[in-house]
Image (cartoon, rainbow, N blue to C red; front, top):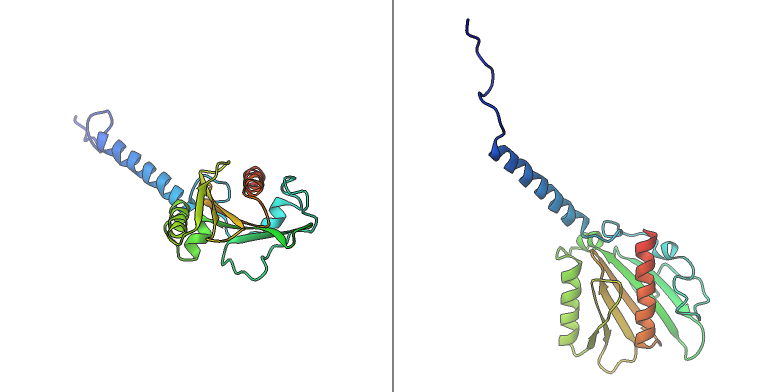
Length: 193
């Protein structure tokens, strides 16, 4: 007596089925990378207390920082980015350092869908076009540059760190001091995450 076999006959695997599974896994992986925004531990976060995460003295490279860091930068609105401000004692006054940290998610929430690397690239191109002095800066990030406006004395540092934009401004600081401070803070942000 013959019995009917349910399903397909034969053994083995179907290459088309395996291909669909592989494509599905790849799409899921790259889709999550796009949503997350990069490999930095903070890339998927938005609007956290940056000063609390860094602690009262994030870098001994600035020994004159005596005041407690403030979560808001005076006279500045940073949207959904996280901020921290350090007043610096001593002469010449006033001296200060501030940091605005924008993540892939905070940029998207503010309407910028280009990603952090493109954001930094465009910002630096526009700064050069406006006559600012832009010079590469090395440190524990993917890419960075210092900026000084035409005729200005104060330096800024803009860095892209795998899904995170770090924008430092140092009033009354030398370029090398700002880079050293920014590098220490960038390392600390990765370690504390």
